Length: 307
Image (tube, rainbow, N blue to C red; front, side):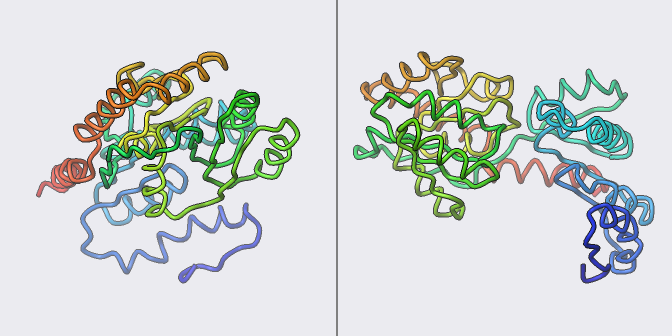
C-alpha cells in the first residue's frame, strides 16, 4: 500500500487491486520473469505479464478450487476460484503443483491442453537424531486451528488415553476446542503460534506426530516432522497417501481404534520407531531437500527466459 490507497471495504480492495500493476509497472523495467506462489492475487501477475511482455510462472501449494468445495464455500466463491484457476492455467507460461494428486485433479477438471509440472514442498533442514529421551506420553500436531484440521475428532479420540496432545497453531476454533477438551477431560496443551526455527527444534522432542486433517495439499508440517525423526500418523486422505507408505515411512489411519493402536505400537517398540523414522528421514533426504528443489527451480527459470 505504498503505491495504492488501502480500502477499508474488502470488495473495494479487490477492485482497486487491479490498478496496482499499472502503478508499479515503471519500477519493473528490464525484469525477466514473474512468479507467484499462490493463486489468490494471480490476476496481478497476469496483468503484469501482459504489460511487461515477460513469462509468468504460477506455483500453487494446494488446489484453491478443490479446497473451496471441501470447505463448502458459497457458490459465488467456488465459481470465482474455478474461473481463477482456469484463467491461470491458460495464461501461465509454466504452472506447477506440489503433488501428483493435485495435478490429476487439474487435468481431469479443467481439461486444458498444457503440461502441469510437479515441484514438491521442501524442507530446509534435516535434524534427525536418535534421542533416547523423546516423549513417551506426548504427541505433537501442528496446524491452523480450524475445521479442516479435524482437531475436535482427534481430541475425542484421545479422551480415554494416557497421552497428552501438544497442539501448535492458532485459529478461529481455538477457544471452542479448549473448552471442549476441558469438558471431556482430554489432556491438550494449546501452544499457539511458534516461530519456525523454534518449531524445528520442538519436533525433535517427539516420537509421534499426528496429522488429523480431512484434506491436505503437500503438507509441509508432515515433511518437517519426517525430517526431524518423528513417526507421522496421518489421517488417510489422498494427498497424505502420496507422502506416506503405510508401515514403511509413517502410518495412515481411518478410525479411532486404528489411531490408538498405531500410537501404542510406535511408543512401545523401539525397533518399529527406529525403522519407520529412518525410512521417513531417507525419503525427505531423497525428494524434499531445499538445495535440490532450488536447483530444479533455477533450471525452470532458465528455460522460461531462454537463458
